Amino acid sequence: MKDSNFLKEMNARHVWHPMAHPGDMRAHPPTIITEARGVRITDIDGHEVVDGVGGLWCVNLGFSCEPVKQAIAAQLDRLPYYSAFRGTTNDVVIELSTVLADFFAPDGLSRAFFTSGGSDSVETALRLARQYHKIRGEAGRVKFLSLKKGYHGTHFAAASVNGNPLFRNAYEPLLPGCFHIPAPYTYRNPFNEEDPERLAQLCLAALEAEIEFQGANTIAAMIVEPVLGAGGVIVPHESFMPGVREITARHGILLIADEVITGFGRTGDWTGSRHWGVQPDMATTAKAITNAYFPFGAVMLSEAVAEVFERDETGAALIGHGYTYSCHPVGAAAALASIAEMQRLEVHRNAAARGRQLYEGFQRLKERHEIIGDVRGGHGMMTAMELVSDRASKTPIAPEVIARVHEATYRAGAMVRMSGANLICSPPLIMTEDEAQVILDALDKGLAAA
Ligand code: PMP
Image (cartoon, rainbow, N blue to C red; front, side, top):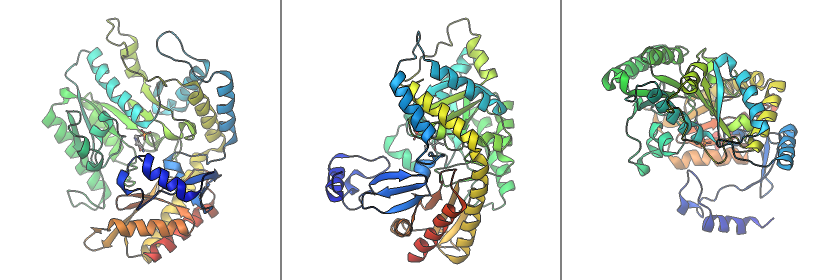
């Protein structure tokens, strides 16, 4: 391997990183990760830490999952690729679709459209939602609703339903017809409401009002994360998702659950929708579907939505959408092995237990560190702390301070994720109690150092 300084210089010269300033690479070079085992990652200077990020909320089974590696190798050997555009397909993706239909049966979802990642899945779901209404003769239903602070990826449609200006402003104009409802974010919200249940009701009332304002018959779908991830682990009150389901159904608006993070055990249940007892019309997945070892995703559709397409006799249901890598056999093989292994290990149970440990640990850290304004989580392996410079006024922390906490935490033995004023923890779901404790101890030291 080339030496660390050489690689950092070449990185600064030639690599543009997602979500980073290309001119910032010399002042703030990224940590070069060179190896990973179990739940630990090692950088080019040989510093090993526990990965509190799970790659990017995606390596649910950790970095040494042999069945997934072997399935990928075997599939590369037998059939590394073939297209699934009209006329051909492959055996593995058919097998996967039956496994997914079984996996998502409690969510009422039985058909799969395969993609190469989360943004692709969101793009697919939004397009299919419009087509669904066109087939049914409601061509005027073209708008989309979503939540402020929601994150759905970075393709133009996904960015248009994103609820954070950071991912939008530089790329405007975005898709017209996308409208945003306040998120049930108890720590900061336009209603100054601190009670989660009352806040959920206020957000639902805002949703009703927006539907009335736009006209229900102009709205195709609403897309929502069952627990908001990148927005800072915003866990809605238990009445929120059922309320969204009831309102959207009453107005003929499709509900798309964005399960890119929350699918496959992360919330402590197998899907985020199931966690809240809600059946969406579609669910977007990616990330952990292959344990992140291969870029892959799927949109799952309900029987009722699928039948509108399948029964069409006019040709309107021809799907003029898809990717070269839709139905990729290596992705499908990786997904089959990942799902089997997640089910064998029942990772959702450990996610619930370790997630509770991390959440309670974060709350204890809040008692010790004045800089922590809010702690969120308690539903599986999605935990966040929001840092402030002053608790009373909730003034957001300066970016250089959170960067210092992040760096000191890394030096003390754990990688966590910085997202705005939040430090987010979303480790592999196979993490042990001791490994979770390493993250808490490292954060304690990191926070003290700041
Ligand atoms: N939806 C959600 C909820 C996500 O968290 C993400 C990515 N973190 C995406 C969509 C986009 O996925 P990708 O980065 O794979 O395109």
